[in-house]
Image (tube, rainbow, N blue to C red; front, side):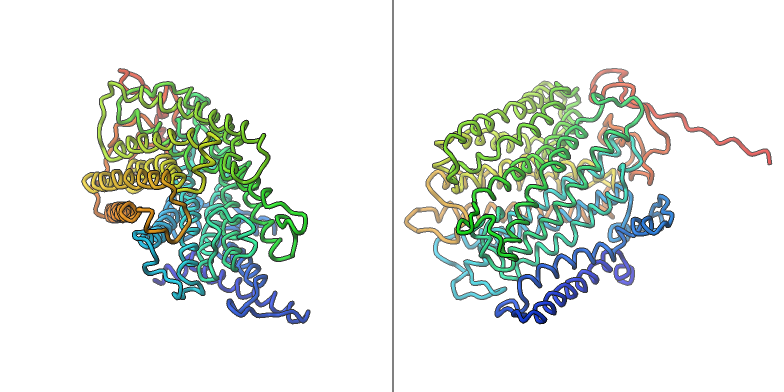
Length: 633
């Protein structure tokens, strides 16, 4: 406990509370001096006080936890040499500021798992309410966090969406941070300090986002559309501010990845000798660098409208609420590919390892990742077919949406060709790879259907959309995320996760998810609206919703089995000695867990990355270790 209390995390949390109090006190004092109200009847302090308090709390966290200490020293003219954290042992590394990309990758992953679990818990709560028609336990007279039952349902539904999205973004950053430098033969990311800063931005951002539930919540869904967000409780401001911090993290992380790939590669590793996951990471980072500003801007404008009375989205003041949707979706549709592209990269990376065949169409897969990223920027308005925008704009966006299926189809054909006549090893990572292909295919098939204007106008805001979106996210990221964790866990810890528990996890989660998404699509086709707390018993959806709720709980149980396997295997798992997956990838050519500086001897790329099954072929060749000459003195 003493070590935790003296850690960077604990210091940051204490100072975040102090910073929040300072911000609240500052605004309250200014308002008192100006003769303005200083309290709120529900949340005690005024909305401006809470907003500045939360913002300063986040800045105080970053200042106190040490993630910007080197920059402050540099600004004062103090030398800041590169340093590593060999003196931190065990769990201490992960609650302190580290410049090691492997530690930062684990930190991202752990924060991701926390947010995903909390978001999943919220889903189970509101799904339990939906298990039968009429209000069950979230009743009208219920009061919790200054919200009645239906209001709390809206908050949990909205937070479920945003926590899952942010958890997935952090999970993407976790995999990329841990794996990309290893695949490139680098000692670290190009900017280690910025890498650490990017992670620690996510901690206060996540806390601010979660704090929205105790400040009245918000009923906008994860999209935050005005006019709902313009008149929601104070909690919506915490939602905006939390996402703002996390978006800042995403932009800096994307910049770091691109520079790392361009500048820090092993000898003879040209663009088309890079592992395919690196291509996926570059495409993802291009999106985060160039589009994340748009969601930050859209949220910031609503914040200013609420705090300063500006009318950006208020028609009475000359504003236009549809403008918000354009700004929001210009990021938030490409953001789907921020989740999906790394997941598809994991599939392409692991598939040849377990199929024991070369990856079919390597260059086409590499280019398709960039194609998806680029085309993804011109499809945003298909989310707005029912928004009231000009009708003539619908057709070009319908065609651009259909076009994005082409580079995605390239990947599917490549995967099928890679699997064809392969000698497949059905280890747990491979099971999740195959599950990802099946589930993502279902999402891909239903996507073009929704791109058709006439169909979308009928199905928009129904549970069919919910089923399609969950297909895309589970197949595009969640299944590949689990595959990546099972695959690289031995490299990070030196121990293997239990294959038995891993397969139980897969065989509970996969059929349960398929039941969940097919059930949601079915009731969506029959007219079930999304984002509602109750439905008419005469619609006949009770039995289907009960099945969906049971499936949701089974998915939760499977994730609990994974978590037990994950944490128990850190100490009790079978030792991972040697190249346990018989992989050609460079990180598996050195002992596990990975040494501090990754590779004691640099390697040179001498072949193709995925020439599995070809006798005598080799991807990397390590330089011979040299013995330093003895001094004569």
